[in-house]
Length: 65
Image (cartoon, rainbow, N blue to C red; front, side, top):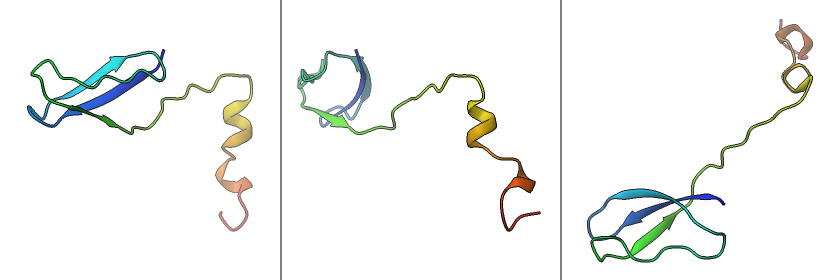
């Protein structure tokens, strides 16, 4: 399940919850309305050679020394 970030319009608290997709929270514990914040997803890239293939050495890039 994904991690969602919310901000309350009443208490101005910021909260993170693990919720099922398509069922966002709407009420804060204080009774205020929760606004769903758009965040940067965390991505883990695994595999042999990933760093070697996608991040060339400085001398491999054209125009750089």
